[in-house]
Length: 479
Image (cartoon, rainbow, N blue to C red; front, side, top):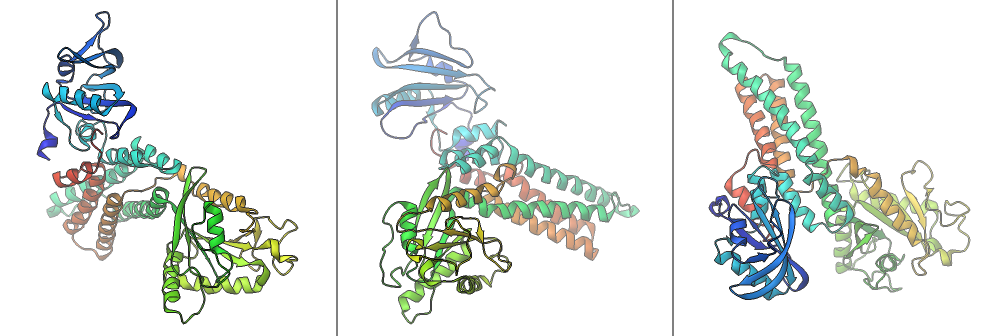
């Protein structure tokens, strides 16, 4: 961390390694303009001023290196809060390295990974959570993960964490004030008011922690598990959704013995499709291993596509099959209810009359529901082999993401943050129990202080060098 804390002028190439049309080299620090003046030549009629771009040439002694555009940002109105210079040049690796070498020869040093963003954090331009959101924004690969990162970068997420911490600090100040007057047996707030405040904070923390599953899925792909009996067309459906022959397709039952998965972007949303082994009783050791893995994938899925064969099923057998598959989730009481369960009736091109399956006149209507109280399960009628009505599945998947009301929610995507929230929650629950059990105020204050510390570590109001090294050391150089 000692190198991060230096106040010298730093420089780095901010564009990815390799050759491109344009590249950018940036400097930050009080000597930025002075260093630039050592090798940058421009028209006498132009001046370099705040938030302006100036055209000119870079020279190495008397040798022309490149024609460039220079942008200047004066402290404190820059990304880092310091004087900053950005040089846009042609993307030649030779040109980039020559300009960077000129900068270093004239007094700057090479920036460490994430050092520009660290200086933005150090100078109060970003808090710690916003700084981490910069990295999330750079690595976002779909619209929703981008939207979540933008929301965090703009401070909405930090504001909520800060609000929770401020409430804890207020509570802590009252508790410590009571300790100062402990000889006089004074209470500065009623215990039921303390409990109500802690209950509110506990509820908000639980909501944030629960959002982590969705946030993680938005970053890495919402898991969609394809399940069903052997030979109902699961692998054919996967290939159809991915538009490639990813899974082996065969009329022989039990062909899929291991998990096959891939990621696809549908209308800006990323889904991780998982084709599983057919669920059935078998003496085959390898098949049973595949079935065990299938059970785990069912538990971890957000959406389950339950594929059935239209030529060999009726509504009663499908309901029994659903109950059988859902029994695999019995270890997690709420896991079944938290999933989107969709019955995909496949092979409609071969089925002929399907009166034995609940359906409307439109055989491909995806809004058909199970009868007898199973109204939460959509039915979609398809032919995976012929690609009929696959769009209905894509529409349903996108509708699911939209139904999560992501735009109005604070979504947690960072493992470090959710761990800190869990620590805060445990401390809050301990404080609540302390109030209920009537333990001394000084012991309750310890729990409240721990909760405040944990939340403060998220936004950087509480930090240490080891934590900062870990966070900014994972950034790319030049950011």
